[in-house]
Length: 157
Image (cartoon, rainbow, N blue to C red):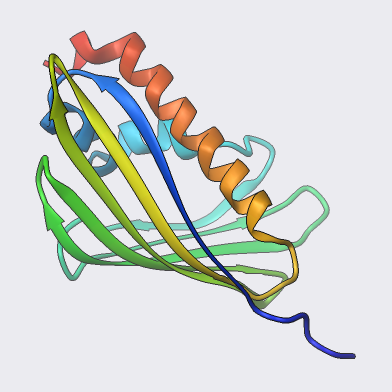
C-alpha cells in the first residue's frame, strides 16, 4: 500500500475578541478556559492529559473514540509572551499513526477596545485527509473561543 502524498498547507484565521490582549491570551494559558473551547468531542474518553503552558513546556492529550480508536495530540511551546504571542509545534496521531505535524503562531494585537487574535498554521498533513478539513476544524474551535470571550469577558476580571 502506498502512503498518501504529504500535503503542505498554510492558513491564517483571525478573530476579533472583546477585552484586552491579556484577556484573550488567558483562553490559551488557563487550563479551565482552554478546555471550554477545545473540548469538541464529549463522547471521546480522555485517557491521558498534560498541560505545562510556558516556553519549553509541553501539552499532550490521548483520547479513545467510541469505536475504540485512539487519537493523540502532542505540543511543544517554543515561545510564549503573555498577552502578545504563542508559538508552538504540534503533532496529531490516530490509530497509532502520525497524521500531521504543524507549526502555529498565535498573535494578540490590541484593536480599539478589543483584541485581534491572528492564528497562523503551517501544516504537513500525512494521512490524505486534506488541509480544508484541518482549517474547518480549527475555525470551529476558534469560533467557540470567540463565543466564550463574548459571553464571559466579565468573568475574567
